[in-house]
Length: 305
Image (cartoon, rainbow, N blue to C red; front, side, top):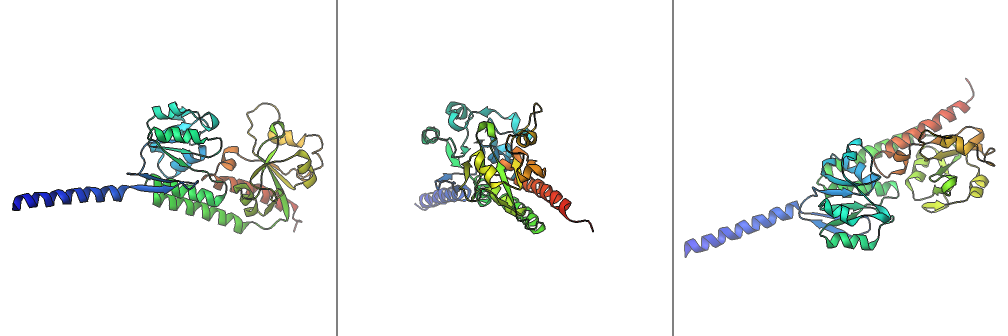
């Protein structure tokens, strides 16, 4: 009887210890749509459909956990060795399932409820990462860090970004000048970054005021609106592939744009598309480049001693 009781007691201890181990390694995150996702352990097989999430994973030292990427994920170079899957409106569920991920990281843009349901019905956790502003980027980093068991690394990364942004802000002076962010060129229909976006925040860090700070988020605008607001600076994110006019040349040669203050003073800046448009760690590079461009011009306006 004693031996039987001891066996039951030891068996109970083993079950409790195993339950405790699972509880200690379980991960619960709340994604950026408010959905709560629980994994029995930190994720070890991930497909990331957005470039910024791939960059965050590598910055956290977790790039080796990726088993697939969205077709536009191209940084760092190591990510190109991974299988690419269709993303956005053309997200290919079968391609993703074939990679056998535990987790798919995706944004809300162009994704559908049906796509999410199809993945979850296949036993794949869907985590939405959808940062629009800098605080959202910190939230995404924290969430992804928790998802892969890299909370300390996430804290270090966000601290580095905060330090960089603070240093740029401290070094800047209020110029009293405006900037227009052209995130889609004229030929495709003009779009800009309004209030509530990380580009709007970058402008403030560099001592500039977003000329479209009165519009919400990423917005479609007209050529007439740009001309009427006459910005002091223009930042274009258009990529250049080595043929035809450069993005700066295209803007400065547009009929009717020749009298804009940004054009007459030569203050049209072609930012690195990937650095300035992706809500991730390389915004540190983007803000530094914009700061340097503004400072160089403002310094040239100062009277000689």
